[in-house]
Length: 131
Image (tube, rainbow, N blue to C red; front, side, top):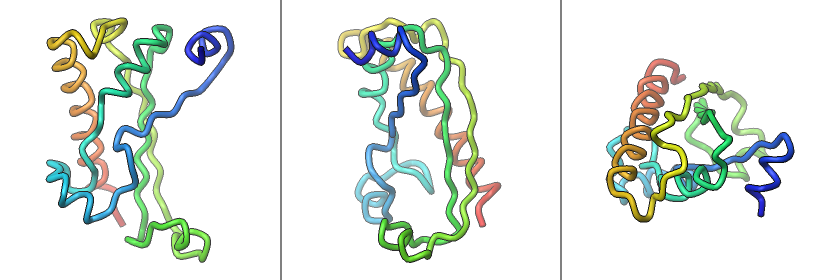
């Protein structure tokens, strides 16, 4: 499996916790508690981390664009000329490793709190750094 290959070779795995690109329509439909982000979808991330117990950090990237034009077409046409990128490593607590997201309610609650804390920090950072 991919998780076994990761354990034998230096690797990077990406998980996009929002699950999709941000649009104002999706944000409104989701009733996200975050002004500039969709609500994170944590299940897939938790399950992936269970399969990779050697992962000790989650590196969160926050990208802040200077424009609301964010489609692939806008990018190709040069409409997205400025962005700020911020990366922060978050140590994964030992209590969140090797647990079963599908079967352990306490773990689901703890993992949700862990990710929501990161999202709150992202929102504060976005507010501080936005164009």
